[in-house]
Image 1: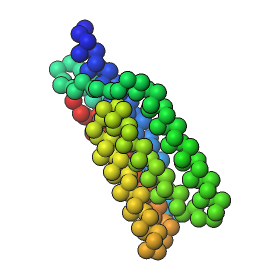
Image 2 (image 1 turned 30 degrees about the horizontal axis):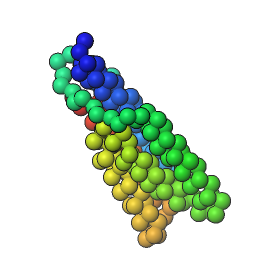
Image 3 (image 1 turned 90 degrees about the vertical axis):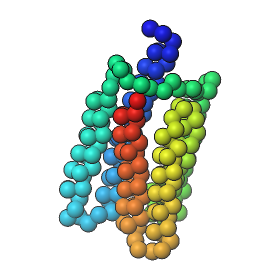
Length: 185
């Protein structure tokens, strides 16, 4: 096997892992959205979210394994594994602080949009570290969801509507990214 073939296989493996990680996180964000729905809609919405997540994961399993497919060789910076760990640790710490601060101050309605913003911003360096251009679009989608959720809070319809907006934006963005990573050559 040539070095380029090995790099292509490694690239494909990283994309598959990314798709496998993003789909369950999309399900979690969909549950945030669903938490804002009326009780009569909960069961159907949960089933729908589970079906979309299963379909997204199924795409990963159906993705071509390499024979006859074209794939781009990834160009990652030296020490990218360590840098990814640092980015993820910073994201985790920021999320924990956000939850602690907004829960302690009595304004937990800001947790979903701020967490969505943090998650979105963490995709910007990951796009470079994984050499995965799709993650830039993921970052934009999540940041837009966060801004939309904050706008809903500022305009005052309700905390529930903000959760629906943030959760739906985030879930759809992550499901779309997972699907794109699965089918990309």
